Length: 346
Image 1 (cartoon, rainbow, N blue to C red):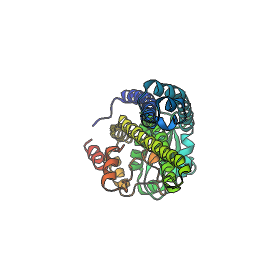
Image 2 (image 1 turned 30 degrees about the horizontal axis):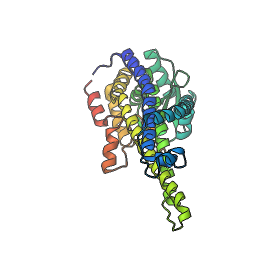
Image 3 (image 1 turned 135 degrees about the horizontal axis):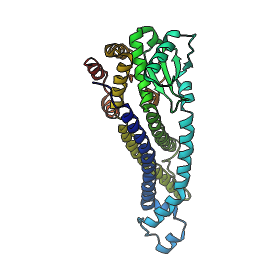
Image 4 (image 1 turned 135 degrees about the vertical axis):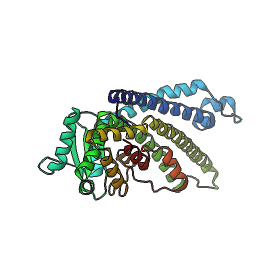
């Protein structure tokens, strides 16, 4: 397997980034419209119980689907959703480097602190004509490495102290070459874009689920024999229904966003392996490094799934059964065994 077509890979990743930027708002706004449509159909009597519609139609009023009402509500709410998402995305996009550093405890590495690592990175960059990225190190006995950043000012290669201690120079060069290839291919920019989008929807979903849980825990289904409380009880149940509908819509949106991660093909890891093998000049050294890392991958107490997507080897999920199967469907990394097998065929 020969590493070719880096410019094609860069162009492909740039196009996928644009598609993600377009697809995410479409999915989000589409689910907002569906949510409003369901509420209009099933919950219209809740919102309009004191309006002239009830007086006009009487107590036998049945919820009906009204496209014009849905569109009117959508045009009023959608701009606020768009503005909120844009602000959220811009803040997360341009502060991702600092957020990753805080989450992982990574510290900048200078030449005088570890000439070995710094020289390896510098020599590999010179061999492929790319600018020198920042180099960070994490004080952690586990073995891992990842690349991050969105531009020349933020591109970073991060390694753990465990990796530096366990790998020899050739193996370390292969791993760093792998991460440099992610940067050259613009994989990091594409991945961070996807991570932010998934994070936005998952946060909304978790908030809605928490609201439902709190509602149930603190009186969402409380009963009362007092007739004066029947209206408030009905309203409470209506709010619960609305939140449940919101949770379902957010869950569907999350599923579709996760599916867009397939735009970030697992092929990117094979491409990065090929690029790393080419840069270090020794495919077997990178294969040996992957084998060592697979015995103890991870990053200490960092349990964030979004950061784990950037690791050279993603730790195996603790989930079992169905959750493990679902996790495998949406995995961003191919199997380590397959990656090693391909490298050994170079």
